[in-house]
Every structure is written in structure tokens, then in C-alpha cells.
Length: 597
Image (tube, rainbow, N blue to C red):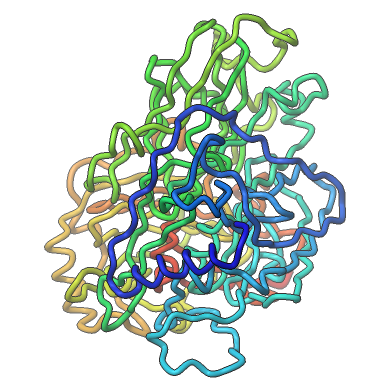
């Protein structure tokens, strides 16, 4: 962005959208021209990371804007001047303190591209001049707060959605890194505007390593092979003819929420901040840390030449054994730690494709020429460094955790595990959803989940909506027990009789057992480990065992504690990671009770 006139053009585009104009179609973008960017790496015990607005070459390097006063770059937000932000590369047991700084005081995107819907429950920083109406798009300062997704941290450092802060302010968070090695990520989590702040670019990876992982010789743990470990975050966006972000501003129920839409789906794929990149690789094994950073889009990923993925880890750590899959499904917020062996496809080129419908799982099919393509891999003919990394295909299948198997949590029948039955609900308006709810309650209803530290609880979540929801719990990890279909019509009828008004302060949920159908399905092989985000499908009951203690403590240790007091601070939340849903009530707070010893 070069001149003030450019900003005025962006403002005009946004104004048309707010007034009901159609979203501009993305321009023609050359695919697979540019290399996959590699985020910078930060190490150390004390860091300052600043949220900024800046132009970045997101579209292909040959992109020519319609207006020559533009320079081909896209105005985005990011941390320390990059989108995505720098990767924090940290070690278990070594505390990392980060001073998160808000320097978005003159952000153009808030005023001219994103229409902040003030009718939602949102951060709402005090404006200099009171707005005339909540139906006018907000034009004040930008609130932010950074959440370490997957981090087992004190709630004072968790990035609680109501712990936001304004430009020129900062928050200092302490991460003890006292959990198993995992692919974590950080992103904005501000109340009611997460969908906007993350879409603008406020996200980055957080790679937590430990000695156990290092002993396996996984790529990235040796000085000889850093380039053979790559983080990959996939997002979908839309751009105008000048390469600027476009975000819909026509609410589906404009008389209630003028600007909120239930799901954003872009028509352009962006990987590590670059549209449809290529990745030149050597014919050897690579470790790919994959994350779905989209607002609402699910990805079903596969290579068009049939090359398999070997998944070695889930959100919260390593699996017991590698799992070979031909297709990898990632919901928003989910991560997969995978190894891909390119040695069998020397000198070839192929595409990583996506077949995930939007909304998932029964929405529209992807466009094979746009959202159906993610990135291209080009395999060379020689290897620079001999491949001594972990081989997941070695027979017999190697164990990733020979001396440290996953702690198996109690089954539902355990009399020491409390079972909670909760629902996922959608409130309909004239034009579509008015809001989406967790357990029939809005965020500010009284807290009803107060688990005890050290306990394992069984949460069975009854999905009464038409979509899959990726549910994410802060602080803790859990294990998927099962999924099972149920009679939605009959259960909904019983539910309505007990809860005639939704949303409610309190709800009474019928037992789901009388309405179950068919067999209970176990987790997929590559879900059979620690998770912090899980897909909960429509018409199914998803049952998870939630461990309110560190993952590597014995399952029968009901007095296990975190290395901090989880009862202090603002508390924690659990929510849908379709962040358009999260911003409109599909999030609930919970408090952990520390028992006296």
C-alpha cells in the first residue's frame, strides 16, 4: 500500500459490502510460482512480540493490481512484521516469557475492510466518541489478546477472551512449557472479534520439544536437518482486484446482527502467508507440522499421486505408533504432525489436494481449480544430507513411545469418572442462524462446569446442529472415546420439552442413551492420542475423556496437580473453533477447582 488514495479505495469496497454490494471475486493468481515461505524461528526465555499492520506479498510475485498505484502487496496484520508470525521454538522445562504488545493503533483494516459487529458480545473498548448505534460498524481502536492454543498454562497467561488489551498496551505471559512435546500454535482470541483478528493474520506456530522426542531422531531436532522440518498452516481468503483482503459484511439476519455471518469461506488458498505456493523438496523424509488456520473451512487432504502421510502426532503430542493414511482431515484449530517420504517419487511434481465440503460435512463441493488445490510439491533428484531421521515405514512398525506409552484414561464405566451430557445448539432466524450455542447457554450465563483438578471426566456432547463443530478445550488435553449416531428428531423433542426457551441460564439435558442408534464407533487410528480439538459430527454423540491434570501423570492419580494453581485468574473456556461461531456465543467458561491436600 503506497498512498492515501489506496486506503480510500479499500474503504469504498468495504462500504459497498456493508450496503449490500456483492463480494468482489478474487483476481487471477498464478499458482505454484513462489516457494513455500518458512516462518522465522524465535528461541530464548524472554521475548517481545508485537502485533502490527503492514503490507506483505501474499499473492503470487507476478501479480499486477488493477490500480497501478498499488504495488501488488496485501495489507495484513502479523506479529513482529510477518504473517504468519514467527515460530517459537522452545524446550520442555524451560520457561518462556513473552511480552505481547498491541501496536495496531492506526490499523486500516478495522476501519475499511472488516466490519466489527457491535451487536455481538464483544470486547468493546471505550470509544473516544460514543457510537450512535450498535448497528454502525465500529471504527475505534483494535483490541487483541494472544492465546497459546494447546498450552497447559495458568489462566492469567492463557489469553482469556476477556483479557484483551488496546493499542500501546501489552500483556506479559509466562509459559512454563511443562508438558509433552507437541505442535502448538498461538493466535488472537479477543471476545467477539477472533474471526476478524485471526483472518487478518494474527497467528503463528509454537513448537515444544523434549528430550524424548529428540531421542527418536525426528527431523528438526538435529543441527543437520532443520530444513527437513516445516510448519504448514493452511487458510482460505478472498481478495479484490488490487490484491486486498475482502471479508463479507452482509449479515444473514441484518436486523439483529448487521455484519455477522455464520461461516466465512474464501475462494483462494493461502499457505504460510502465500497463495498456492510450491515446495521444492529432496527425495527423502520430511516432517510436516500441519495446522488448519481457517475460520470455518475443513480440509480433506491427499496427494494426487497417492503418496501416503505417516501421522506421528496429534494436537497434544506423539501417538504410540505411526499411522499410515492416504487422506488427512483437519478441522479449524486441529494440527497433525506427519512424515512424508519423497524418496519413492524422485523427479516428480504433484499437488496436495482438498476435497472437504463447505460447510462440513454436507455442504458445497470444493472448486477443483481453486479451493480444491493447496500447494505443489516438486521433488528433486539428489539429497544434500543423508537421511538418518526416524523412518515410520520400517517394519515391524516402530513405536514412537517405547518407554512412555500414552496414559490411557478410564472408560465410561469407571465409577471415578463423572459424566456430563451437553449439547451443541443453533438458534435460527429468518435468514439463517442467529447464534450458535454450547449447551443451550450464552457465554455470560452462570458457569456450570467446575471440574476438580486431578479428575478425569467423561463429556458426551450431543450435536443437534447440521454441521460438524471442532470443539476445543483450553488448558487440558483429552482422549476421544467414541462417536455414535442418535435419533435427532426424538431427542430434540425431549430436549424442547425440558428446555422450552433457548438460550437459557440453565438447561436440563435428557439422557441420550434411549435415543442411541447403531454401533458406537471408536476413534480413527490417527485420533487415538491426546487431543485438544476434536470434530463433533451432526447427528452424533461424541464422547471424550478429559484429564484435568498433566497428560503424563498416572491415570489413577486423582490428586495429580498442574505446576500452577488453575483456580486462580480469569478461568478457562471451551468453544467451537469455527471462529465465526465462537464469536457469536458458541463458547462457555469453566473453572477448575483445586482440592486441598
